[in-house]
Image (cartoon, rainbow, N blue to C red; front, side, top):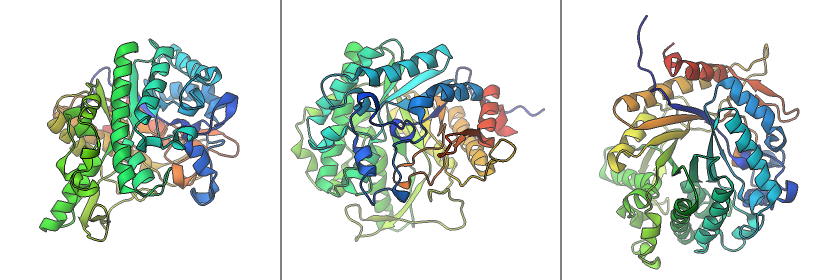
Length: 450
């Protein structure tokens, strides 16, 4: 029998979700509206006019979903808290019923031996705070730190792993620079301020955690290796701009204490002068781990008409794409992990999201057969293991996603789940990829070679 390398003992195997994408009942039990609740109820924003009002009904079906986690053998479950469910007005008093929902969830996960891996913010900002300027308002750092402190106190000793933000780059790029997510501003100036204030909020929350919390705290970012379409100097320069904008914009300040110089080419020379120098001290707080979300790579070419980057994407031919239009590029995961270690040192890493949307066939014999998703996981796990064998301090892996769910502006048209969801009946069905992932967990990685 051929012996293959395996993941180390104690490797944290999990799956991930986010609050607005699965919970439903967004205004139940005293919760306030979020910006995403309001955005989805505005015509023209979401495919099929879908909303997260029901989603996977996890707010009521969470016990059954934990049983499914047990069935898959998950060692950890990564999920986010809905800020407006806990603090309906964004600041001030706590909604006890909202907090109790998460308390029941966390207590049951712990009782079942599943590690809660909690994200404080996964894009759904209380609507009342967006009305006050959202992340482009300097007070947002204090708003977030106040909310975080209340949560740290409430769950102290019950949660060991905390993340401040999930993919702050998406909040900035999709919501402030472009107009596809709330607040849909389309402003370079607001995007620069939002990015800076998200980093300030991250730092302020880490400070609050050190004062009142216990366990570990980190940050989750989405990364893509960037490639130039040609070897021409203009294309290489365009690639460097996009790499700095996407991959370094949040990690450099948080981990190195400075912004990458290429951001001047995006936000304008001197853009940092609007911020007090002391801000970087708040931003540059020691963290315990870094979460990396990986889905694909990016190929770009120089394009002076594409403001503010001067770069546009290139779509390669004769490669496989997911239903999101993302190239399947497994080696990019290894490249990202090695790049992070080289640039930022040996900070413990978790792959906090990795998965693929593919069109699934109907249920057959009580299962959903999804060979392309299963192959996707197999190849990406092999890539992650290769990085680990090269010395990357990788501590865990979270498949995205546990359930088919509300996929933001794509509504319910894209399916990422290990578990299929019938959005009419709310029936859950295991996919072949879920059964494969269970074998991976049971064998600590042996199954990826079978």
